[in-house]
Length: 207
Ligand SMILES: [Ca+2]
Ligand SMILES: [Ca+2]
Image (cartoon, rainbow, N blue to C red):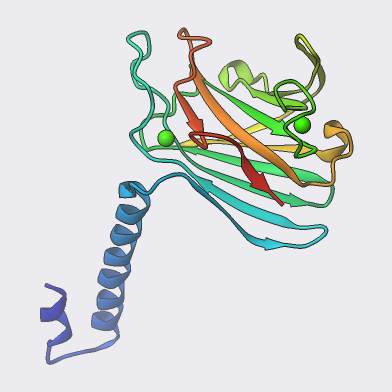
């Protein structure tokens, strides 16, 4: 069909616009297919790092969330984008299309802020608990030997397939913005079962 348009004997502005529209549509479809159909293993990559700005994208397989009979559709995390800048760290968490239910989905961002597995609770110094339901925002908590202590609450922004949350580094012990993390996804009422984890094993490095 696209080829027929390209061979049209009258190629006026309207036709050119139509061709561009067709190709942009094809490109969007291909881009979506590549993004949603990826079966590559978990990976993380830092695309730029400086002393003050860090950008890391972490991907996770779509289709690897655990099923639980109590949950209609298990939340399936596929992407995490982490941006450190201006004294804050912004997390963008995205689930596979149709697997995010803001009423039941919960996230926990686990942070090893000193990047030392031998310190903290099982290596972790902080948690960020994200409870979409009821507009509760996200609790930032410092781990203790046996539990945790909430040190602040920050707002959460929602999009169709996930949520965004920004945490001041001052709430993370004035961390320098370099840390290791893992995101675990849960759903009510199947708590505390972890339905998906990103990365699948270990922690991803943000630095
Ligand atoms: Ca996943
Ligand atoms: Ca640690």
